[in-house]
Length: 65
Image 1: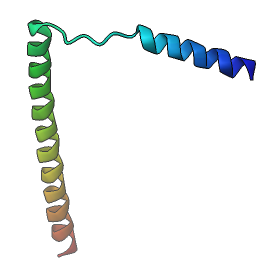
Image 2: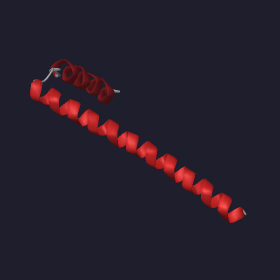
Image 3: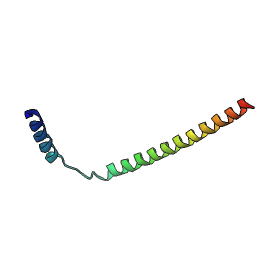
Image 4: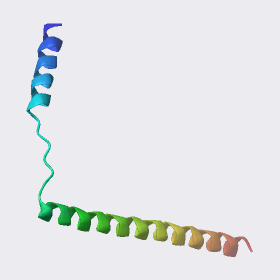
């Protein structure tokens, strides 16, 4: 019980010490570039998955004929 009380106190004091900063323009530019790269990679992943499914369907049809 004593351990949990001290842990709660530490968490509360740690939470009050945390400061959220907005960052500068360079960070925002880097984040925008990173976000764009992630969206491009996500689209490539989706396209690759669709192409793989098409290939699997054609191979299945070809082997069953």
